[in-house]
Image (spheres, rainbow, N blue to C red):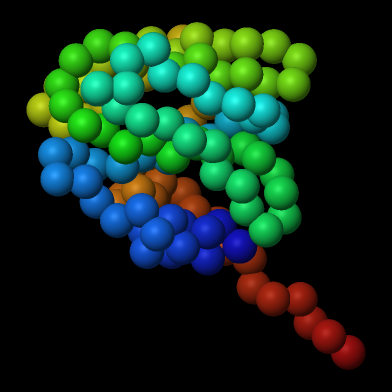
Length: 117
């Protein structure tokens, strides 16, 4: 399912003219996402078929510093973001993981289909 999701994201969003696109995954569902300065990057929640609401797609526009406000159903978290040479660095990322869309994480577990008897 994750492989299918990543493939769809690559097809739909593509790459921007400046930098890379990133996915931020949360350990709990995300209600909404706000960016302090949208001249630097944009962030949108990604709703998948199974409706887990745990992914955020980030598109980098230019270098700079900004913040992403992640509104979970029970709390709000501010992620400090620094973009330098098209690479994104997150601070305050407890409960979040991020990686470029072009390079999925090294440990990507894809389970085989179940045996149907």
